[in-house]
Image (cartoon, rainbow, N blue to C red; front, side, top):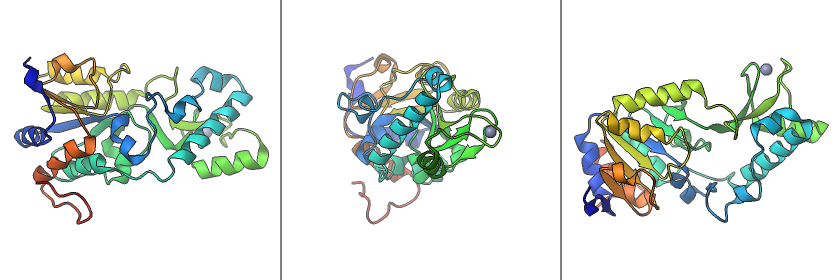
Amino acid sequence: MAAGRIQTDGRLLADMVAQSAEVLAFTGAGISTECGVPDFRSPDSAWKRHPPIPFDAFLASQDARLEAWRRKFAMDDLYAGAQPGRGHAALARLHAAGKMPALITQNIDGLHQRSGIADANVIELHGNGTYAHCLDCGGRHELQTVRAGIGATGAPPSCACGGMVKSATVSFGQPMPRAAMLRARSATLSCDLFIVIGSSLLVQPAASFPLLAKENGARLVLVNREATPLDAAADLILRGDIGDLLDPLWRHSGSRPQASEKTPL
Ligand SMILES: [Zn+2]
């Protein structure tokens, strides 16, 4: 591949989107850092002070479950005010214009949904941290209720069915969600342009999707601040601020940006 693959002009991506029949975005922590959501991998990340409890430890003891909830709420308080950023907004417009039926995300912050993409069209590989669910019956539990319950009883929450209640995220050591993995594979195989945004592509099996798309004939674009293990496979690599790089997508979204948002060109 030519050295020219590494670029800083988001219009190159906008042109590729215009030439494509179906786009699939795959987003990681980088799209949410401008929104104030801490990136797990950055050296000064708050995650380092509140590391998640591994799944087997969560299952094994009540103390570990209480600690898991304490750390989760400590993290939630840090980004309680996070709002979707320019990257989320650009992708929501692309979706609304019919260009991108769904997207895959490694994020658990729910910001794609907040930007206007329906829950059914956000494929969450690592679950969702904005609610909890029962590990037995799958029933949904709201975080506010869980928090109040822990405050009142000092015990970790349990479901009416007797099951343990856990944040609806995929913890370390917990199996990947089968339905989401299957949907991600299907979406990967139907797109002709696969755009990785803000992911270091270090987490498997999630990081296998870009390669699968490429092997299936799709073009692959990487939008990230740093190099990734898949750089050699990419048709275009965009380095820089994600909001800046995705802004030109407005031109091809078929709808006008809000007055308060940055207008391209
Ligand atoms: Zn239950």
